[in-house]
Length: 404
Ligand SMILES: Cc1cc2nc3c(=O)[nH]c(=O)nc-3n(C[C@H](O)[C@H](O)[C@H](O)COP(=O)(O)O)c2cc1C
Ligand SMILES: [Fe+2]
Ligand SMILES: [Fe+2]
Image (cartoon, rainbow, N blue to C red; front, side):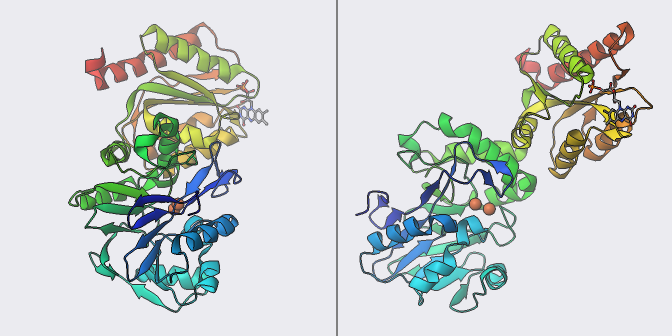
């Protein structure tokens, strides 16, 4: 057998691939540790079934893996749990090589298959809770809309308790060496899993909670996601992490994000950081918006209860990178945050009004001190900056009483 495929049990084999070439996932999100596109072959004896495909640049390796596992046997089904092209762009090539294969999806999958790839034949549509026999085994399907796309669904093999969860319970990072949770150090993957969740799935946390509630009724022994490790020993670790992230249980800490052209606003950020430290706050991150990736800023915003944003006025509004960041935050549907903001100007100002509008839109607890400084901070400005730090520290001490 091809050593790059991994036997999971007597009738299930991993045939996924690692991608260390794509720099930006969805052409947006950095991939410093790469990403895996997981795929599986289920052997039901009489019949065989492929679960999800890989991104097209890896199609050669993918097809090699498939033929080595099939070893001359026929491929009967391919399940399309999720249509995003990181899992389907190799499907048309697969169909050229295995033209008789039946595609299992749902009503929405059919529409996507036609519009993405002009595929209209040999499609089997399954509904919520429907069971499909694959030789001597069977898969039951559950719809998980918006985790991560409208057509997303999961497949559950009840005889073994294996959940094929597509994007859910996935993370960034290639599978270097082992593919199994009990043979890796998950600490290597944890931050990249959080970044994956917050960047890719987080906006749909309400739907994630709904999906988790639905799947809670299943006896899940193993999770085979479409990205990241296979959870054969402790699936509850990833279920708990997803539950925590989807409920947006923020941690005690403050993320200060600033933009600054000539250093005045940066100085304000440093002063607020000092003020927080003087109040006993230990988890403080100060990030320069022009240097630090948006992707990581989203992950850190998700994480910390306290968010303080600052920038100079630029053409009567927010400094453009900050403008982009607050728009992104507005669309993230984030909860459980305390917000502070600070601004700098030298003409007539304007950034402060746009921060105020953002504060109203996101609805987070807003701190009263809102320093707006002309150029270099003076005595009275330093007072207000300290006040902002004190108010944030107070809010954290109330929210995390047991930590003080
Ligand atoms: C391109 C540009 C546009 C600006 N637009 C405004 C403005 O519309 N209103 C204003 O009050 N200040 C404006 N300023 C001035 C800056 O807000 C001010 O110099 C501030 O102190 C810069 O802070 P920094 O040192 O953190 O970069 C502008 C500055 C630049 C370079
Ligand atoms: Fe996806
Ligand atoms: Fe994906």
